[in-house]
Amino acid sequence: MNGVSRTCGILKIALTFLLLPGAMAALATACSRQEKAPPPVPTVETAEVILRDVPIYSDWVGTTEGLVNATIRAQVTGYLIKQNYQEGAFVKKGDVLFEIDARPFEAVLAEAEGVLARNQARWVNAKADLDRIAPLAEANALSEKELDAAVAAEGSAQADVQAARAAVVKARVDLGFTKITSPIDGIAGIAKAQIGDLVGTPQGAELTTVSTVDPIKVYISASEQEYLKFMRQLTGREQDLALDLFLADGNLYQHKGRFVFADRQVNVKTGTITVAAHFPNPGNVLRPGQFARVRAALTFKKNALLVPQRAVTELQGGYQVAVVDGDAVVRIRPVKAAERSGSLWAIDEGLAAGERVVVEGVQKVTEGMKVNPVPFKPPSGNAVAPAQSAPPASRVPNR
Image 1 (cartoon, rainbow, N blue to C red):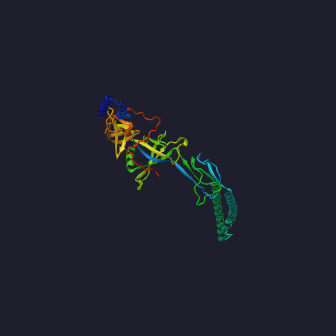
Image 2: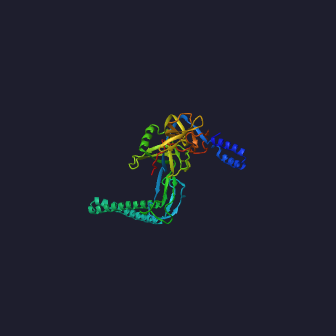
Image 3: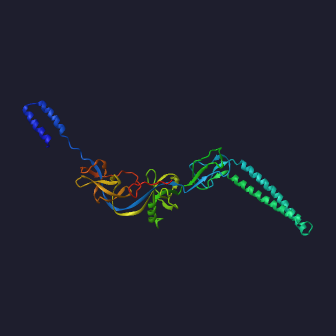
């Protein structure tokens, strides 16, 4: 019994002898307010510090890009009269995407073919004249000047035929360009020209873009330090190193990728280098321009002490965890956080295997607080967050 309770008891006895029932009632109310129940012990979820070998992941932010991106432009000037493809659909090489009014080009071809026919007739006549003049010149029946004139006329007629044939070929090519086809298999983008637009002018914009997306390319930007570490670990492992891809919704992409190439130079303004990876894309689910995070397990850490990442709190540039001792009392302890692996965080200093740390309820505990520890149950169905190679650091996205 504390001092307040003893005082209340003495006063009750005194007032009983003095027969003051009204005072007794008032005193009982006041004493009941003083005798408050102790606060309940908070319940927290704890996890055991585990010791095991874990892969150490590095991750990079990047964007998806088509393996081949073909910009479709009109190669002749004319008015657009038809669009033959569905925007966003898969098209095959040779499929006609747009059509330009072909009538002016058909007229040019007909005219070129007429010029060719006329020049061929002139050439035939010039060759016949030369065949008649040549024997006469050999017999000295005609002068050398007349023979030279016949040879020149035949050569000129032949040259005119060749020029006319070239004009016909060009006219046929131009006529063929009125049907604008896809040069590759891929996904066709949104049309940037409408029916009736004059296309093919120097100021004319592209009509659309067709991208090959299976496999799809992912560009990532790595710092010089990350690149050097990556290349040292990659040497001789190009075919064995599997890359994971996390999408914008945080889910892990089901297909593994592979490293393809690094750019020829480091960007002197950002200090980063562009690295490319290929990922299978059956069904063309992934499209160019999507956000992506690429992860690779470059090394393994032996005998790592691991705790859930949610148990680690950052405070003024340092890290700390709440440890629950054998008496269910909380001890706030500074730690040295190292690499992260999946949802776990490796701790280099400050913890020992088998200790229990608070995972849920960290915000409501303080040093020396008595708690009711229960086992931590990770939420089901949560996507695993991309693992990082160090405590959070900024990543420079690709262009």
